[in-house]
Image (cartoon, rainbow, N blue to C red; front, side, top):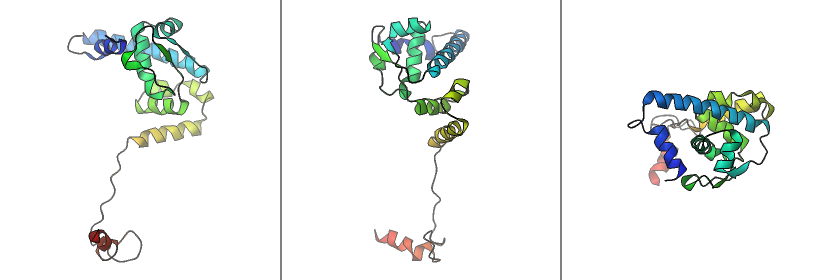
Length: 172
């Protein structure tokens, strides 16, 4: 069984895992995740790669926590890792797109990560605010206002929609 499958079974199987133990595991993981991001954000352009085991050893993590970290950062990487088939000896990288990582942290509602002071050296407040707004608006579904036949035509002609562009829409 691939590492990712083992991680998902350990982290998400509420039927067979003790809830209190899972909560402790997640708290431990989030603490470790924060520590690694603090380190990575110190030098965000550094090329970090190695086998899963080598990176786990480098950051002082278990193989499962390294797998979890790789799962979490996957969508922010410049070159995706073969996460579905990954084993301990699989070579992986942590080269992330800074803007995408920040927006993905916002999207995940991980304020303990996108609020890290290390981001201040990467992006100024204005840029962080813009990225935050962009991430939030990306998931907002906007429904266009329905135009009814007797509404004024949005083209500004002053005519009712049914007598202007509504007529053109009927013809197609």
